[in-house]
Length: 295
Picture (tube, one colour):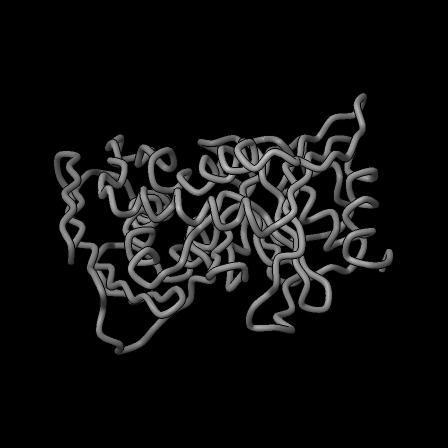
């Protein structure tokens, strides 16, 4: 049965007309959409309409029309993937930028962890939160306004290899078709501040044999790395609704790309950036030094 559910992220409202459960949408949406939550009767900025049939996807400014054939949780997964692109355009209109990164904070001061997929940034954020009590802000997508963090994704996809670093009994859900677990880190997120000042940015790489911490002094090098991370949800990911097997087009609006480049320049000029490599214990200790103390 098709039902209507409404969700919200940082003042952006979406209505979804599809045969899915609200809990499933919030579950998987928490990985792709920052601080997603249910919303009642607010006027929606855009709608998603789904119908069963031949796989098809159509975007316009106010609606996403989606058709295909899959059920329940799988459909929630694909709708969340499509929604994440639409939310990116709406964030742009509000002056927000989402960054492919994880983030933690202590007493209102935050650090960002950037790197390619599987570099260990999400695991490092969880490791610091679980073992040292830092506030977990984001696992994969961090929302920025200027030099402040205003939100992030509280759930994350992790492979079985990453789970070995945690002894805690944390809520998780098996995503068998991706060979991953969806982990809920919400219990480690205590919003003691509405916004978090970014003190440092770390480009990290989990590596057992090589350990180092180096400041990235060349502005151009910082700029390229930051711009790439800012474009991640615009151009690169997600690029496919997996179960519906529908390509999700990149955002082609040139104004969005120019804005991302300008914002990358702003971050590169105003935030100190470091390259950090090592195992999670080594990297955690270095991050804690920047945030002041080990607890």
